[in-house]
Image (tube, rainbow over all chains, first blue to last red; front, side):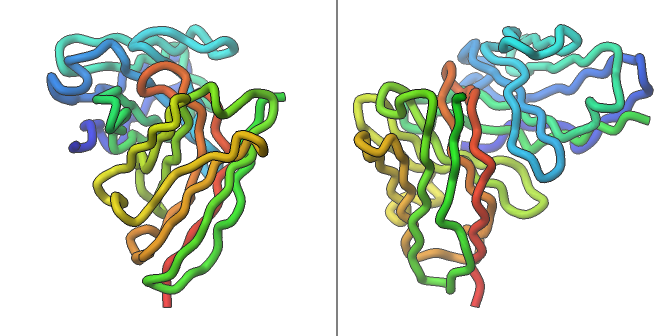
Length: 111
Length: 117
């Protein structure tokens, strides 16, 4: 199973909005409404930010939102804050035998 | 508090074996799907293995036949037995609790495995 495709980096200024795309295939992103997004700060474990395409776990800011169209999912962060600077990974369910495939990760820089 | 704590990492020579442990607290591992996810230095996340509540387990092609995931329900602990280790297995290994399909809501702090002579 190939990794999902994400841009290596994105950037934005405080207060702005950014969107990170995540492109897969009909066997993963396009085939299921099970796309997740994780935030990872340096030296820390990943943190679940979005699950099931657009749902947020309790405690995650509503500045984070997710969507999907066809084989591409997207994470949008509005009102950028310095603390949002981190690596972001998308994932998608694929099958019982291979339950998840990750994207290559996107480094978000807050200018 | 819901928590996962990994242990067992270290420096190992190529071809060697290592067993990682992941102790859970605040929930029961046997009623959840649990996975191991690894991250090579400076690289992205890679799913390694899963064990479902029914007890069936599966592994990624990159480790199939070499890594085995198991659990001890009495200790509420997961294990990852890693054999025939290669340099490319060098990574931080995280255990994580399955939330919905493809999502993991609880992660451990990770344990570093370095395969080098």
